[in-house]
Amino acid sequence: MLDEKYTRCPGCRTIFRVTPPQLAARAGQVRCGHCQLIFDGPGNLISLAPPKPGEEADRGYDEAALGPPTITLRNATALTPAPDEGATVAPDAVPAAPAQEAVAQIPYEERFAWASRKKAARNWNALYAVAIPLLLLLLGAQATVHYRDAIAARWPSTRTALTHLCRVAGCAIRPLTDVGALSIDASDLQADPAHRGLLILTATIRNRAAWPLAYPALELTLTDAQDQVVVRRALSPVEYAGGTVDLAAGIAANSEIGVKLFIDASATNQAGYRLYLFYP
Image (tube, rainbow, N blue to C red; front, side, top):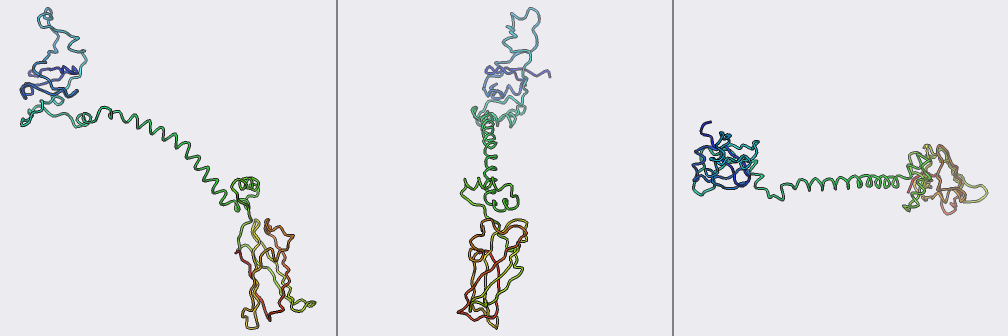
């Protein structure tokens, strides 16, 4: 365009393409869209046309002072009239882009805060890389201690390692308790012919599970002729299994044990009985 002129910011030396109406506003005072410096637009007009031979001395043409040939040409949208209360902006002078205004309003020291945030994120990632496996290891150890009895029962090869773990955690490995896998296959209650008032209880307890189960407690109930309760007694494994049995080992998998117990019933009068097993 024939009416295009060029003015240069004395602060950052950025060259702007301007128009006469833009220079006429605010008495020629304009704001640099790059460094925000307010300067005299007409007073800093320059020519980008190469000088004709012999004109350097007359015009004072200085290519180094004008800046390198590759320049940042900013059009009228990057150059705004100087602020003045009550004045209006020239029609051809469009305010700076919103993105430029947003960057200009951010404090300089905060413009590169993303670098520090990125460094902090790397530090957190390194912490997570160490903490997460450690927490998973602790969770696994806690679960192993909690389910130690079931693990040792189903995988006997782990019993040695679990025993060492329990020495540290202060726990013990016990047989599982599964009353549904136990049954009383046979039982009988007879009077001892050699001793008046003495009863002999015999029973067979079977473990149908594929792993050892803890010894249950037995509940013996003596009833009268109307099947009413005369007396009820709970028997612990120590009372019915005998002192030679290893109660800590439990009833072996797919096996049975025999029970024989003498009961003093001289103070009662009974006609029948009921026998149950349970875990306290």
